Image (cartoon, rainbow, N blue to C red; front, side, top):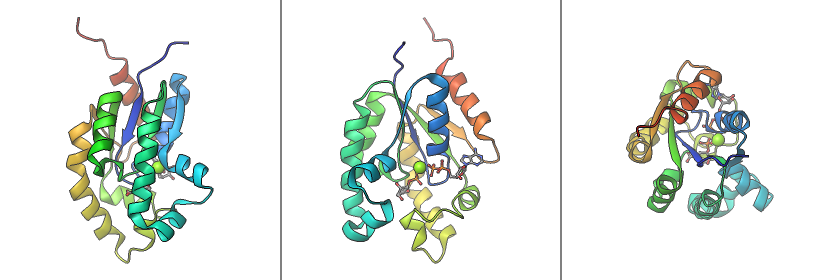
Length: 176
Ligand SMILES: Nc1ncnc2c1ncn2[C@@H]1O[C@H](COP(=O)(O)OP(=O)(O)O)[C@@H](O)[C@H]1O
Ligand SMILES: O=C(O)C1=C[C@@H](OP(=O)(O)O)[C@@H](O)[C@H](O)C1
Ligand SMILES: [Mg+2]
């Protein structure tokens, strides 16, 4: 089977990285990996527990290690966590080792999509989730854009429509 260049999904919480990543990988015959799931599988505990015991800094160290390892694999779609791009080394390896796709979502849309989940410690502890998401996006949006080969709007669009746009980009005719 053909080996495809890796695809790295970046963007804020609730943009759909995990959901789109899994379906995109299935559609293209690639392996799906999610950095958060990988951290949980290796440690045997969930993300909120890691934040509680090791702080965000401990979580970021684990995330960095995983991104370095996973991005060196072949034929993968990697869904990163929303804060993975904060680390300059992470940005460098993602940009160098595959196609980076920024799944964009407004804060209003993120609020809807993260309303029920209880596994995001940065939101779980927040009294004003909107303010937290706004602040995070202000800092992170330029970093997502810095390494993105493609920016895809996900607001009010089905996962299917988002995947269609990504595949059209990946399969575009290349200039000679
Ligand atoms: N394009 C979309 N349209 C509607 N709901 C979506 C879309 N993408 C993701 N979702 C939903 O939003 C929630 C968060 O998605 P998730 O993939 O976990 O985001 P992320 O990994 O970027 O934080 C999930 O319940 C998912 O089903
Ligand atoms: O934005 C962030 O800093 C985080 C996003 C989460 O992943 P998702 O973006 O997949 O929700 C997860 O990595 C952790 O809770 C921290
Ligand atoms: Mg995710």
